[in-house]
Structure formats: structure tokens, C-alpha cells
Length: 205
Image (cartoon, rainbow, N blue to C red):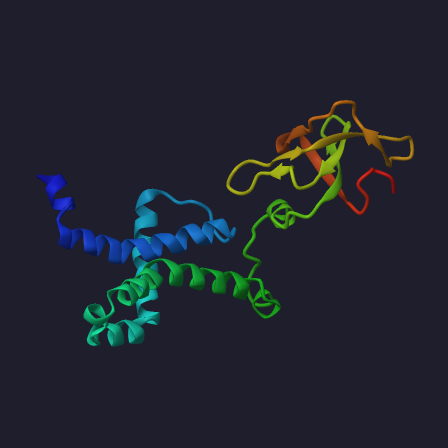
């Protein structure tokens, strides 16, 4: 039946050949923040297109290997070559695109690949002292560091500060709240977020 058709060796090889490299590129693309997840049908079309690009770039090497006796003389090398073609090269092209999209030359001609300042700032994983100003006028202060977390597109804005801090009368960071285990802030309640370089770990400025 249909299951046997899917499991047919020839069709499995075609599936692996024309979907896997592109799928690897898509996931690497999303991991680097250059795109957001799409529906299954669109992902399949994109994966096939990226796979074809992958083969086009590597066409000379692929033809050379297939015309050689490498498959019979050195099966391990032959297998390593196709592992490179299917998995390593697609990630390499994606990283190259990421590097190119963030270069000053390209940024002058096209928009920045990261669509929101929220993603741009927090994707860098730099530590900050943070003051969050809420819609009701109140403020939340805390430390954003290695154990903190901020959501990324397409998820709604949320931020976890690993320590909640008290502010002094001058608006400076006074001390961590007693037994603080952090605080989660929902982006829907935020008016602005003020960041300060975290140069000292005790909260003093």
C-alpha cells in the first residue's frame, strides 16, 4: 500500500537526497535567527529548493567523486563525502549567508536580517543590569546574565531575569531582593526596557 511505496528504497534515496540537505539548511537558518518557522508545505518546498542549490554549488565535486572509483576503493571516504554533502555543507552555506547578511556592506543595501530590536539585543547574550518600565508606571529591576532568558521571534516577548533587585532613591541598583530566584516579565506589560552594562557583580555602580 502507501506505506510500502514510501519505504521503497529508491523513493527513500530521493527523499534523503532532495529534502535532507535543505531541511538542515532551514533549521540552521532558523537557529541563527534569520527566519521563523513556516508551515509544513512551505518548508518542504524550501527544503527542495535549498537542496538543489546545495547540489549546484557542489556539482563539480559530486560528479568527480561519482566518476571515480572512490566508492569501491575507499567506502569510508565515499561515505564521509556524502555525509559532508548532506549535512555539513548545508550548515556551512547557511553560516556564510549569516555572515554576509551581517556585514556592513550588505546592511547598507538591504534591511538587517533581525526584524526586532528585542531579538537583536538579547540574541547577543550579553549581561546587563535591567530596569523594566511597566504600563502602570511601576518599575522592575534585575540582573540579566548567564542564567537569564529572553524569548525570540515568533514567540511573544518575555524575559526572565535571574535576580530581582531593589532600586535606591537615586534610581541605582541597591541590592538583590531577599532569597530572589528571579522574575519573569511579560512583554505585553512593558513600555520600555533600560539596559546598563554589567561591569560589577555586586550591583554597585
